[in-house]
Each structure stands twice: as structure tokens, then as C-alpha cells.
Length: 221
Image (cartoon, rainbow, N blue to C red; front, side, top):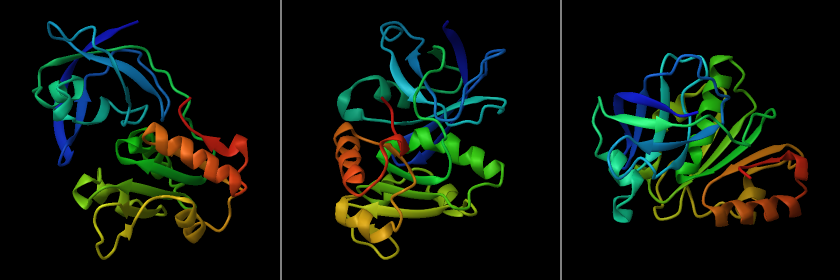
């Protein structure tokens, strides 16, 4: 079933990332980590569906998506960045295979953070963030989505890894085997992975080699 919903607020959360707050259809439900297909309710764009993850909580009054814009692609995300409050989006029913399985390590690359936002926010609201770790990889400091919120989440251990800047207070390089071995002591725990396809596939192999259990790897299939 599709729903046409109005944009109620647009908030910049990084230099090229925006959170879109939407009216919530009556009875619409989802679980933290789930996504849906989204298109723009304008001529020429209604059939251009793209998957985006809910970053609001299941009980919030409004739905929310946090979406990175790619102006160079001249596609849906670029069009989304041009929308205004009062414009409308079309959303489908929720789906997704990233769900919370328990305390562990969240590994995100860029916009791959978005499936984890609702999960971490839900754990924070419940007061259960202690024991969770977030490894968040970006090119530059300005690319970090919602850095202030993440850094202030009580109990969450957050490490920012920058590949193209070497700055005080941030790790420098890539999330590779050597990096994981340097920051993680126990690989017998749950690992949540989301980012570019190549990054996810590489990390799955590395974590398997380091002793992580296949059933302990959570990613979008």
C-alpha cells in the first residue's frame, strides 16, 4: 500500500544531508532499522522509487528520513534536496533485514549510518546504550551526520574515522582488518554493518576471519 504524505520540516544535519519530517499515516507502523520505497509526488518523479530508512522512532508523531544528497547524479536525492516544506512524498510499506539483535558494534560508512539511527535512538530512549560501540567512517569531518547527537548519546562509545583528513580527536584511515584489531578486543559479539556494498562485503570477510560468528553479523540482504 502506498501513502502520499506532506513534508512538515526539513533540517540540515551535515553539509549535504537533510532530515525530512513527514506527516504519519494513520496506523502506519515500522521497526527501528526498517526502510521503505520513497518517491517524489511530482510529475516525472512518481515512479522513481528509492529505498530510505526511517530515522524516527516507531512511536514518534511524525515519520522521518535522513537522506544524503548527491547533486552530481541529477537524480532523486538531488531532487529531494530541492523540496520545500509542504511538498509531498509517496511511501510504501516498511521492509528490511537490519533489526536489533542485542548489544554489539555498529559499523557505518557515510549514509550507511541511517539504519542505525532509529536503533540507537530507541536504545537511548530506553536507557540501554551502555555497552554499544559505533565505528563511523567518513571522508571528512564535515561529512559526519548528526555528530553532536551521536557524541552526546550516554553510554555509546563512538569513534569517528576519517579517510581524507588527519585531525586531532578523530581516527585516521579506513575501517580495515588492522583497525578492527586495534579497537576491538572481543569478536564474539554482534556486528551491525551498513555502508557501500564493497565496504560491507569486505568487512563481512574480515570479521569472519577474526572469529565473528555468521549469525552475529547483521546487514541488509
